[in-house]
Length: 204
Image 1 (cartoon, rainbow, N blue to C red):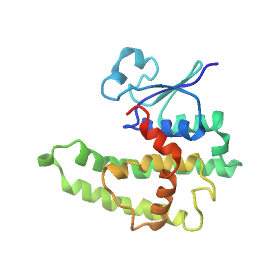
Image 2: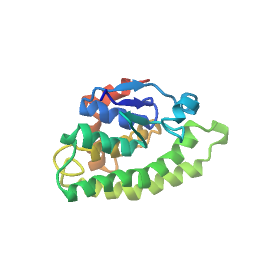
Image 3: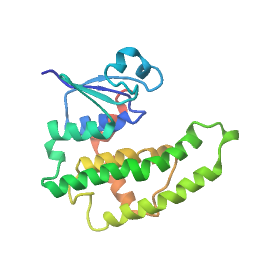
Image 4: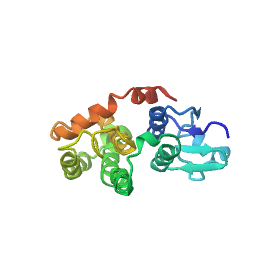
């Protein structure tokens, strides 16, 4: 079987999966697929019928959704990123799903207003409301990191990559995390990894 092929660009949700591949040290083919034009092509729809990025093709296996791709890549090619045991697996799923359910919808409200809405049409109330709503999940995360370096303990795992990958958009929307020092320390540790910088350079 040949190398897996990963579709997407780093300036999108595909960054999360590009980062996972880089962290694993995976040899993979990269197809720089944009979410505006390339993903709408009929040829790409045979890979991901949703016309979204990222997508992965590994032999005859096709997979979409960044978090699913990351968990597959870790299980298949990067077992060092997985903590052992049923409880650790459950916590990996917990933080992965938590990121896309508790953090991402709120930060996307801010993204839409700050990055995709003309200044004269922006709704400051939506931004302020989303920022206030983020305080609750960030307090949960801050408490979860109070006595350990990473989400599952002392070692960086795919759970950390998945959640911090979701939260990478905080930089784009200039959302400060200083009020949650454990979160800020953890994010700095995640983003200081060489694989993070490598992923930022892929498909830009």
